[in-house]
Length: 329
Ligand code: UVW
Image (cartoon, rainbow, N blue to C red; front, top):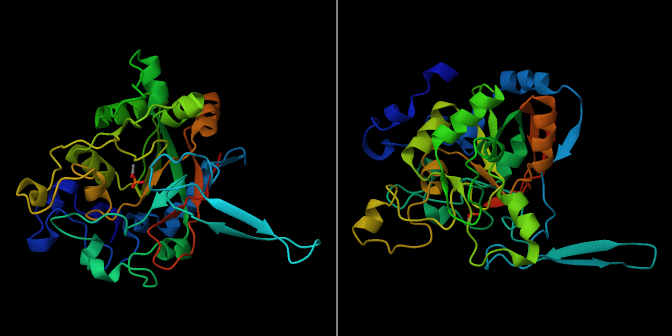
């Protein structure tokens, strides 16, 4: 479908029946990658024009960046290096949680309790060994496109309103648009949007003294955020914080009918923006992306667009993956 023919977010709400409020079927009934379809060949080719210096910047934290882990159930990796003889080395990683460090969360990660998983795929198909909505579908196409950094932390500092880093402060769409305006950055359809909240820099500085329980600012859990991302035809959105949106999540207007009526117990996911972005819109998200060096480079050059590549693990049925992301400025 040509990009000007996609329904707006408001129009998604006018779709009938089970499709209401969703992007299901717009990229094809059996679609596996959602908004990554916005990254057409023409856009990939055009994105090459955002490379000015040919400088490569790693956007990944080490796999073992957080020990103790940020989220308790995602334990630290156990890396074993061994040799069959003294002239040989092999290795094994145990306890790898694909979402413990810089990551992409794929379309298996969240269902909407009232609607289900992306494109209506039944949850019982989303098990190890099956491919439905798995991260392998992303790996097999790869992610390459025009990246845009929205350095909200820098904008808010300059505006004299620093983001409160040890709190689940919601970052509204107005801050995103003001940041882009201040930077002189124009979004294009199919962009990979990278949002710097400054949280990762804060956590790095805090080290072992980081706040417990953990809290992080992030994109406001509101329909306005989802609408803005969809209407700009963002292919992938990633941030330098723990959950893209504020953490811990709080009850919001996004609290589902299942929870409001007591059919589903409220949980740490109640009110999350994840539940719109991933299952309803098919928007994969990135978390814990290391954007600090990129931000320094962009501030120095005055250019906030570049090429981004990311190649998740080719893991059949994977829920998420280390991002393996690069910016090429
Ligand atoms: C959190 O759990 C904080 O987010 P996610 O599951 O998306 O990594």
